[in-house]
Image (cartoon, rainbow, N blue to C red; front, side, top):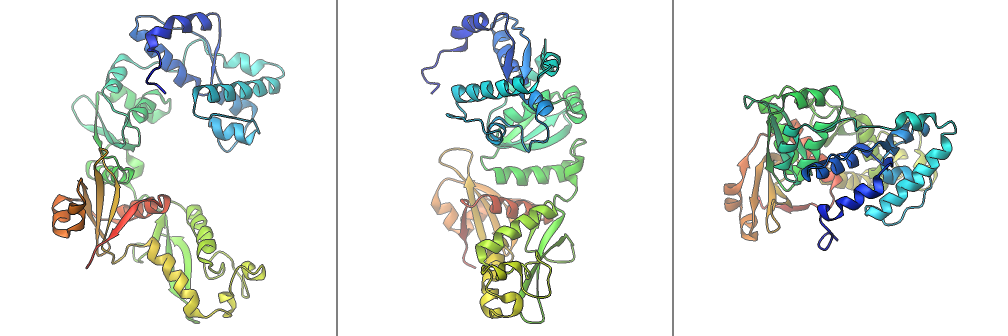
Length: 396
């Protein structure tokens, strides 16, 4: 779409003309205004226009929405949208949203107060210089202060965009980073999973001053199993306990319950035995004919346990030897995450199938990394969210 599009300098004069004496209206206007101002500044022109942000207006006029992203917001309001994520489609959606907001603000007081004569935050020249050297790739980034010390480690699927957010956010942590940042280094990974693992290890090793939250364990709850007196395997979401061996882990209790709810449907499990329906008799699903009756011993423990074990086997890599194959840094490259006997060994990159099919060669290209409870959580969570990831089982 951009191959034959005009360069910015070719349309700059027309943009000045059509925006003269106008207020720029945009969803997240700060971002659009910053882009325009930056491009004009490169041409030696100071582009100044008042702006109005439909995100801020929507938060004031339509509070308590689950999301204020353009797509989700217009959907929840029943605004028809075509050609999403294209300039015309998004612009028309913003127009329809803005008209609705104008109707809601009968006194026009909020809109008058929301007009910004200048953007909230202008990037400093040194921040622009840092951004200019960063790529829009998946990887891990390291924010350094003047003496070279790393003050923050992060991962992103788009490093340039994420650093831009650090430089434009107005929360206290972002302001401190903006004041101290001198340079940003990065490591492209291609794979989000590799980036997550590298980020976790770097934070534990370096202990940057602005990564305090992630120094702690990143999960709070886990899925456990036990066999009851009748021989049925029961499941339970509970607070993570280092003395017990979990099937898989979760960032919070709600995500664990959500996982179990889907598992009950996918594996035809009993709500009572999965710990989501407290009763001394049959579960609700049995009453509506979607449970085979394990809750009242109507289904044999042997048949029921087979399905529970299938769930456990899929979501736990305990005692397994396998390689998780994901995206690489280049088109012809893949990343490999090696698990041996249920232990995360490290990551590597390969170009040829020969390398991945021979364990001796594979081990030689793997860079060792620490195995801990957080790496297990990261890998299991990633595999739950990404069903298309390729897994190769290795012969023992």
